[in-house]
Length: 438
Ligand code: HEM
Image 1 (tube, rainbow, N blue to C red):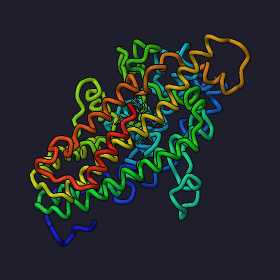
Image 2 (cartoon, rainbow, N blue to C red; image 1 turned 90 degrees about the horizontal axis):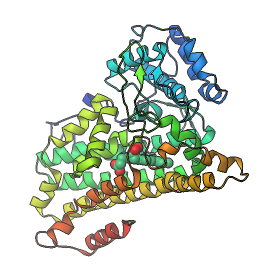
Image 3 (tube, helix red, strand yellow; image 1 turned 90 degrees about the vertical axis):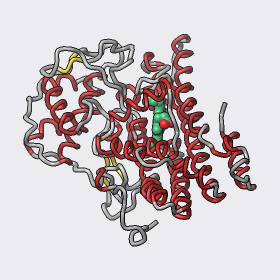
Image 4 (tube, protein in one colour; image 1 turned 180 degrees about the horizontal axis):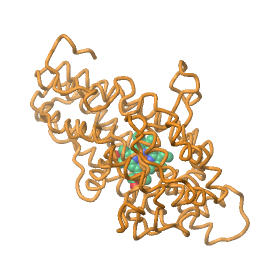
């Protein structure tokens, strides 16, 4: 919705938070190479899956020269350097699975990784902003932003499934962009007390959340659950609350005391955090603490954008105050779609983690010969059976977050006192309760 010209005073713009009009939080056209000086890094990073599978990555990294980082000048160079160094870090730590982990990252990797991370305000570990937001290129630059026309810059073991996992998540991010842009219209509309403007903007937000779910469905087409569970997942795991690395990791040449960081997870994606802030979803207790901590794994301007949304007058209070049927309907639809997205996510996590985890337990108990696929599941890390890569106790956490989303529904609170329920509103309310999986 173009509001320019109608209201001149805009409270905030996307650009000031390094958010693109076309791509949202996605880095537009990421660099795919660093200056020649960094060739030793790129040579390793480009063949990571091969080096990991032949058990030779650690040796290559031990022989890697310690490079200076001051030659990395632009934000895009620093971004690619973070992706390269943090991917190598994951490969180094998890090359031998969960049993033969290391307690120290060698200085040729730890020193540049920590320097680059410090300049970007990011943690020295692989994050969502690396693997998804800054790890893509179009095969045909003039072609569409589609699975067929996209490829990863750098990858990890897991073949087509790892490609699918990162690129489908990228498409989910992209599908949310119209909703992200409309957040500004919601804020502006509240500022000018313009009910029609807020209603229209909320319609865009609810449509965007639905498009995110549609894009998310591609995960089931492109990612094999046994490859995800048995192979990919460990390389996204961190060294905080992870029983296979209880002490954390020493970054040699940086600090003698071990450090602990959560692994990469789309819980670090800013987009759902933005919708939660906009709608007024309150995450309490340990799930709230986990989600707040995940903001420290986002690029700082994106984290500031989320914080900025919450500094504006509350949308929910505005909707309650106006008691306008169309506005309330638009708000409720956003809540219903967000609950729906989270239910779909819970079902996906059940398919990709919970079911393979119980299969792995069975297979370990029952040792007869098995196919390659079952063997991958059997050998999957046991420490992660009940946990997400970010370290959370998964399903309870995800259900709590989903239920906290449902709690902001206005219809359930006002129960017809301030807002008259029309038929479609009642349908939304019914849909929200039916969508609850348990
Ligand atoms: C196979 C696909 C996926 C799996 C197995 C998966 C798994 C998980 C797990 C285990 C968590 C718990 C936090 C942690 O410890 O990491 C989580 C959280 C989360 N994931 Fe995913 N995820 C998948 C795809 C996605 C996608 C495509 C998105 C969209 C951007 C997404 C967004 C989130 C968010 C926002 C959270 C935080 C909880 C919430 O806000 O509801 N995930 N995911």
